[in-house]
Image (cartoon, rainbow, N blue to C red; front, side):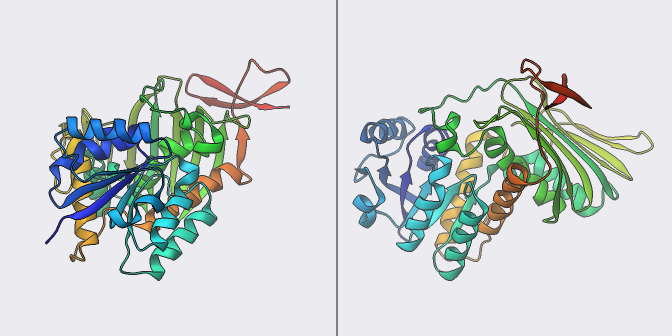
Length: 362
């Protein structure tokens, strides 16, 4: 079988450090196009790709999908968030398979339209790039929940915060017109997917606070009820909150790191017996190495596109659920402003966050 001809649309940091680094190790796929409105970015991405061992032979450099449409059959979409819906929708209309970076779209309506377009063309596949499902610790926790190893899950606490350290190629992540939002749109796209994967699709936003003031938020706290489980998620791009998740059940409690690798993971029974402490073994399709996460993601995408009897690691429906939940946080009645005590006219609400007293604008 001939390798899948692949375009990468959007040649920034995510395309380079994730997808283009992995592609030379996926013989089922051949890179045939790099597409970016800035040809210099596409050429820089091609140099990156060849440095990783990829071949530049027959790779088309183009400014738009239309220019290169005959050169590929499938695409990785890694454009700014607010362009996801338009670019992925155009590709699906052209009969191209799509591996779409998170979030699926920056509105629930756009995500629903994409999911509908994919469903209407069953021979064209829309797959979400949700690589945290391949983290060994996340897969381990899901297994514990599904197998009843924790008893009935009663509470989840997820904390993930540190000064922003990703090395972007552009400033799109800090411009709401391009990013759609801040840490909730970016990091919570991953976290919400894992929480829904663990606990099921039924979700209610109980409370949501952030510090956006109309821009991209750096701090956010969401209190949710997922599958009836009280779930609190605290995220920051500016504060060192740590990276941990604790899932409490009636029979046991599990604690894992939320970064990769997870570091020390623990499983302790309600009576205090320690059942596990240390690393977690990667059970396929989970992967032990960072680059292998994206190799596996691309292998799975190629298999799905080939028509093999293989389920995608993350579907359009998974992306749609995340997009809906993000929108509920941003636009729902539970949203409140986060504490910003340097502003005048603020009053205490009595809620205490990690290292921050919550206030509301009077």
